[in-house]
Image (cartoon, rainbow, N blue to C red; front, side, top):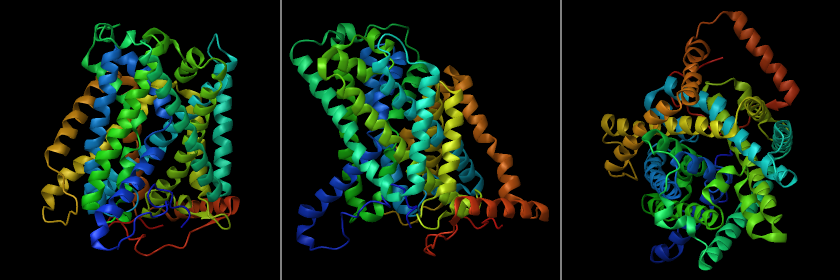
Length: 504
């Protein structure tokens, strides 16, 4: 079904399920690693690395501590990836975190995760990336000042509307854009790292000397370090997509952990080297004063070719917006199919086979957030909710180990891995909430507003008939306006996750 936009379901399967045993390690394992590394390039490495360095440095307070945050952030992602790999092969259902949590904890917890993702995580991430796109496009025209507030919001809104139209019009166009614009981020990162290494070889690394790197601009505190990790986690977001490829890799028990051991350290290395390159030519004060770090870097080092940097970053962010629009519709589809969202969101266009209602909901929510949020507050906002959902999901792994110890687990990680992750998770969220009570607390409040919505909309079965008539009329109207119908589905895909599937 064309709406299968979850990474790993819409990709070409590079690794078959058979093959001569003697050639397994020679042929299959390299292909499996290449496949998963390609997914990590598309899903982990993204526009976040052009957004987060300023926020990480601001909260860390020194160059040295900010680099430590980037390295440790990659290590935490590796622990989480291993936990998600176990869940992915133990509960082989589409929908990712939402499916796992619904299967383990029941409909209410799954609905709250879905509710926060639809209302907060995807729209806020889209808003941040769209604002980055507009800042990098407009920054060359406003070199001595910040781009006007209205101009950045207007350009970001136009970008969101255009890519929503593309995704509504054709799945092929959307995937082509994703493939082509992936080159933008790789070009920008390669250029930054190479130029930075050249600068270091020439002796320009004063800000990286240990005696200077750990000079703090503010007294370090656990709360500020926690916020630095939240800023870095925005750049690493997407690591949980790696577990979606488990059904397409031969012997995932062996190959998936190996590929994770390769991909996450490589992403961590790329991010750390990018930040080292920034500091090879920029002082911490210059980086903090810049509204578009890569543009400032290009202006200082690339001379007449400085225009390459804003174009490359703009291409990267443009593709990032398209990718998030593409994947958000799959989550809405899974939630609507389960009965946790209106069934209209599970419908696709009759001819183009695109999930128009789900895309429109995500587009509208993103534009609303664009108008009310500031970028770095939005990053803390979405990263806090992201980490909250990650922790709940990995807590589900521990709960499943206790309640169903004999369940078949093709991958079974050491218990120290999820426990270590949960300890870090608890410390990070507690101190983030203490340091930014309004930003983080607001996210929790919005998530908890899903409790009455769940009991009224999903759990309450004996609603008055007039409510069903109104819902039916709105659904029919939406079908006529968007020209959408239910897709043909595989019965195995539509098997309910919970025993209490809502009926209309």
